[in-house]
Length: 380
Image 1 (spheres, rainbow, N blue to C red):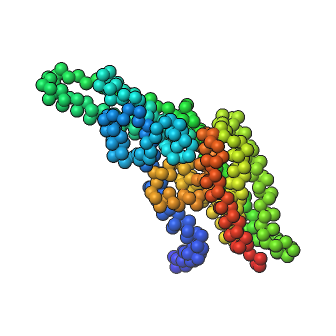
Image 2: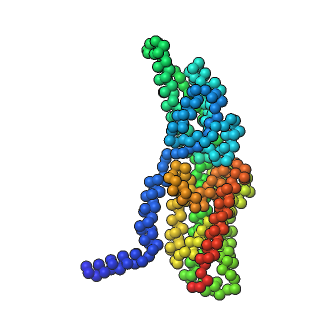
């Protein structure tokens, strides 16, 4: 038993000396529980609503008050035409639009029925369905208040309660923009493309420099007349070419097998995809410069799955997360690429509407290249 305890102590010392092992054993569970507890939610909060009110009567004003008092929605604009609504969607400033017909209140009182239109961003069909469902609940809630109000008016007019039979209806007509069939592939395929490219590219380059060290060939590279920056770039080129082949395969399968269209500029989408591939390769190179073994590099590359899935907007809406996690998601390259992919593939927007995301990815590429260059050790 004494020898057994000695061996147990030895193993504890080995674990405590390895900071990467401690990181995986102690820190990763904390990160996972925080992400599962706060990032993963089926609720869609802080949805941005645009109102187009042709009627501007008492009923529509009351409905807008109900929307403002609901914790799931924020009215961001009152517009005057459907063209302005389209522009808000293209600029990613709105998630849902509510359009009230002319004489909405008169239709309620005279025919007992009034219709309004709900326009949702169908490029994320699951979230769009949740948003329209919430809005329909708000309309149903107001309708109950309206019926109670009309009942009170009838009683004040000395009408018998039994003779009052309310038959009012608000009929919402829902339309999913960019995805009228509400196909789930339109939501997941652009995100999965970003996930696959990031993991494959980062994994390939993460073991590149470490492999040279473990095989003993790093001395040959350092003895060459090439400067470190040239060595770093030279190691990226073959992986970049292979990643381009992967991109072509993925796009062909998406378009011809899964029937996912590229509604926007094909060349623009390919150009931004190449930029994203470069960022992913540089991220793997950064990992390679930070570790000393292929196993550690592989583990860190695989750990990228967690933030990429949960903080990129691939499966869960970013706007529903706490503010701290929303800020943290800004350093996830996949977040910006997924937004670009959805805008260009599903919405078919012009290139000017994805310049912000493109600039962020370009900045990430410059920063990662500079950091990887500085971390590249010219001496073993």
